[in-house]
Length: 73
Image (tube, rainbow, N blue to C red; front, side, top):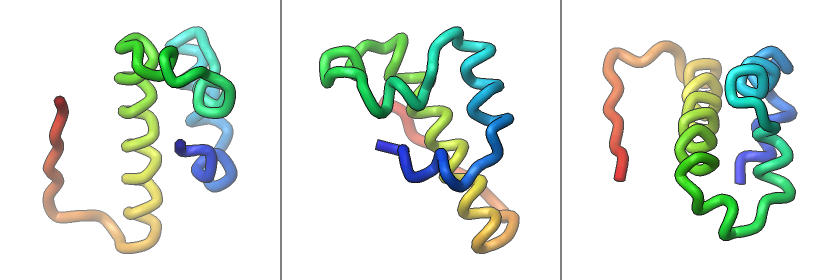
């Protein structure tokens, strides 16, 4: 989940995440078990980071949006 984004973004985004969170998002996406990924401490920051990355990709492809909406469970 999300590994494709690591090749399309600057390292600074990943480095900032790791500096703030103290763990590797890339390693979590690549090596964490399903049970580990379900833990809120891993899941919520990962979902945010990946959503943010997808948003950056959308801006690159389509331009800046006039509005945004979000949803969280």
